Length: 510
Image 1 (cartoon, one colour):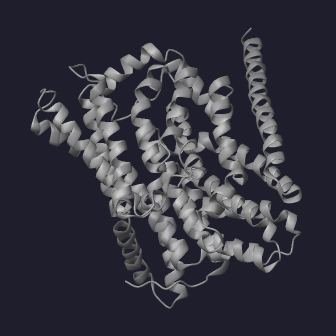
Image 2 (tube, one colour):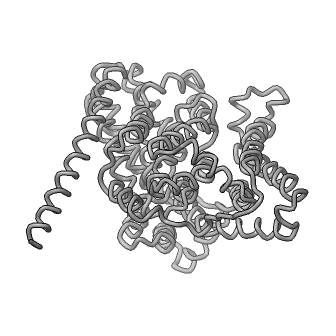
Image 3 (spheres, one colour):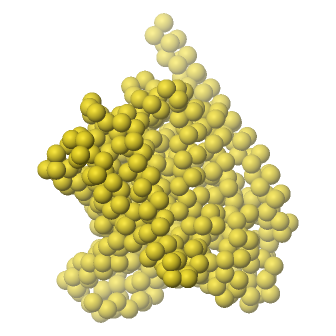
């Protein structure tokens, strides 16, 4: 069915606000997303002369369209989760956990190792989320690191790393959006101005090194240290003949073949540059890598009789069944994003505030950061957000004689897009991070939100400084100092409150 976008003004804000509010209030994501989708389709149908019945029909038309558009992602996740289950059932995860337990003996070393692994896998954020979770979850569980903390580390080293990595699908996507004004060179120039990515990565390592957690994350960590990490439904501990190679080799082949697959699909072996090739259709390349990992597992496990051929197939089916719940969230999230972007003009309505603003040019970076963050959070997509706003930001800077603000403004656009994507309950990366960590999705959102928002507030101050100094370095230095000071202050404040509360209870009992 053909869809034609109409502008519905402030009504276009209802679906994302309704979906997010219901998810946070009810702690139930599926019905919240569906209600958000249907409310948006109802607004579209009634505004274009349709009926409630046509709204129902168009809801499933949009859902079908999004499943078709993201078919490779669905296949990739199914194959990848098949590899995950096979690796666990082979005993490879347990063998790796035993080995790593002799190397990573402290919580600090495990957190830092997880953070480093997240940075090393920078090609694609979804691939990062599931791979890091699969490899590190047995180790963090053993050392009583909460699933919420693991999910945060995964999420904070996924999109924030990909958005500043020169060789990634994200880099190519951004470069394609600014092809008329400098392309890849412009993207490289925005990296120092992407304050959210820089501060988020710094915060992950600082908290990992110092252990200065605060807010809901601190309470999740205290609970994990007392009772252990929450057990996931698909965590397998199999005593058997598994060896470390049974974990490492399939995943290593998967990573290498995923990179080669992205290059192959994009035409690298036919003369296309590597950076352009991996951004052509990354999920198709990732699917080839996941299939290669599956074949490697078969050749590694079956001849050694770690499992029978029938068990091998059954484990793949089990892996696919485990990915169905998060996949349903993804499908509903894609559908909601489609309704907002393609039908009722949510992005156009929000971005209109930017183009009609008469504020001083020095406020342009912080204003763009705020608007972009709200837009990305509402729609749960960073690519959709910067894809819509980059042309508008470019036109604003050109039309107002503010060419000197173009790079800072684009950096703020990318930073705001990543912040919204990072903490939105309906974001692909947020969902996949909670999936990779086997953490309850809404708990991941609740514990991560204060961390992400602290960084966003400091970014806002940083972009005020950038707007009037025209350099990112002063903002980076001041921002890092503010971030460290804020973490210490929040951690100490909570510690004092806990001591005060404990003292009151003890005094009352006495």
